Image (cartoon, rainbow, N blue to C red):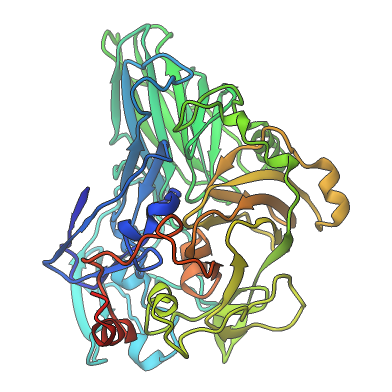
Length: 532
């Protein structure tokens, strides 16, 4: 049971936590699974996590609350008597890393927008006030109200003019102002360890758009878990963590007693590389960190691709249940359908938009799950997005792809752009079976890993490349498949997967919870049908 109080001065939309939920998803949050909360109110989640273990995080998904620090870590521990494939560490720590903007989250979600008069934003230096921002915020009356607030650079990595607009003229987020570790800038985070002991770090990239590399000076990290899957225990000197992803590593404090750098740097952002540092402090330290921090990879795609391919499932380890993870032979199951998902960018009605298979998603006035549950007409159309790209220009729609419950599908993410993409599917974990450069073809299946591909819920796709996943569709509902690059998600790079069955058995889906928050046409329909 989780109680969520709301202190934001705006509506809050709590999206599903970044982990799969099994058949109990409607008991957790009913709105696909989204719930909107008003300031000063709270909401209680009641959920079961018996079919899930591992390291994850949560965040609100309305606008850019995530940029204001609206996130936190989630640890789901193994049940007693279910073996874990490593000894208990001396300490277990959550490490939340992410790119950071000096602008307020209300400014970050102000542009671009359908109505430029309503959603315009001005950010400029106020004469004589130093580094202060004058920003325009949105009100329901569509009147602009100026609010002034002081800002300061938490991360001193690079100097960027904080007075520039939050969005570029092309409708894109600007380059970040820095990187944070657990909300702190350069040298702000410190972790104390005892020499000779082993510790666990649960690392999540909670940023808005940038892949990051994590490393600890002079220490090796042993990967043990990825988003609920125990992995082969491969050792790395540094680890690429793409937006939305979570990794769990062990490291041993086996170096001479002193302080060492914890380093996080941006990937694929050359010529400018963001960086920040924290401190690994030995309890018997003879002195502080000194000198330059250790370098790491910057633009090397092949390095990151090879590391990603090396991450595999530990087939003999138990997961949330006593049986070994390798007892599910996903590679021996025939797929019933292949879906090719291609991201793209373009202009619609003179505005910057992003899309999937030529469709740029537009949110309706009624949450998708409510519309589906109450059979409300006109909110969305089934199969309003193609299951493969056809090459047409971008257009706006509330895109939904319907798939059959208990089918086993293949999804290929085709990235024809020159940036790294990161994709997340609510409600599910999936098997990553392959990734490579170029265009995916049926011959690409010859290089699939059909034995020990890692099961996770967020996966990267490299520039001009593809990534393929297998998914057993065992969770009825409306599930959001989206980019984790938040500006692109905000401007349409997402759609909904409707996993449908005509069964009304409680074994397949719980009924709507009594405390479900209703809005849009769902509120009226629920009262008319006396469902709640």
